[in-house]
Image (tube, rainbow, N blue to C red; front, side, top):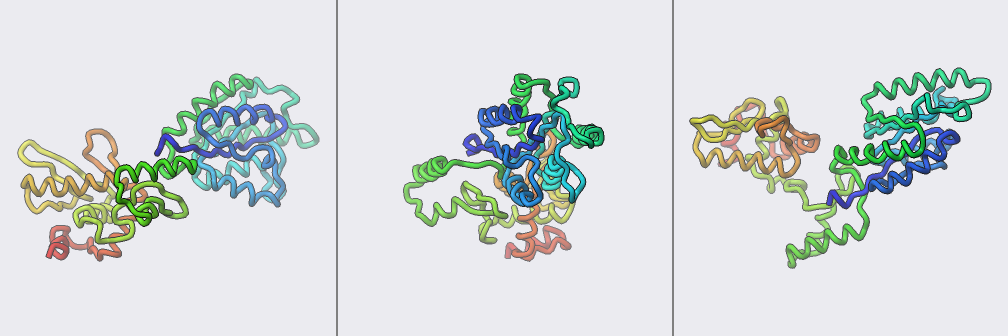
Length: 326
């Protein structure tokens, strides 16, 4: 389903100096499978619209900041521009931030702030631009409309490669496609099974086969549960190693789970780790498939399993396993 997703992006900028740029970005966004949000009605919004703006940002998958030649309207409450205020909010929410900056050398006088406070705003704009450039963002630069389109397209395209698995939007017809696909795989599937196919985790709709153990501790093989729980209570890592004189060994946070070095015992724990990888509860780090770390979901599941299964990680795992294998 990943290739069927569309991603929403909140476009944030001053308005008058970047009106044409915003319009061009809407087209580029749509061409790259993004749904542009924000638009003209949210530029330099008065305070009574701030709740609307934050709600729109909250519902987006990305935040795109465009900086031109103006600092923009200043919010009296915070003393900063609404554009900078939107940027601060998006960063605080942890949204992936994309930045497009118009090169100062390409900005004409008519595109700059005017009025009594223009010099103060020019200084604020320089400071804001410099902060954004140093703030661990994806930053690209442009000089005119055509150049903007040229740099914006790969910016959107590359962003998708790093998007969160839970991000994005799916059209209803694509959801129906998934249902029909599931029915073809299993003609005996019931409406109850279909309902399980769509679930909500932390206010996010998840589409796909339910992860084993989501609702029932009994569905989790004890080996997988132990690996996850002991890893979470330690350094968050699971190791998969092999030497010339033994079968593959699996350990979590430096603790051994295998009762012996037999091929059967090795297969048992390798399979337990493979389940955690398949469910997205751990992921490989580095090369070689040796070190695995818990994901955010993995830590959540580990806490849930520890509480519901009553796993005592103060005990040696081989001793604690005996309580569950009786």
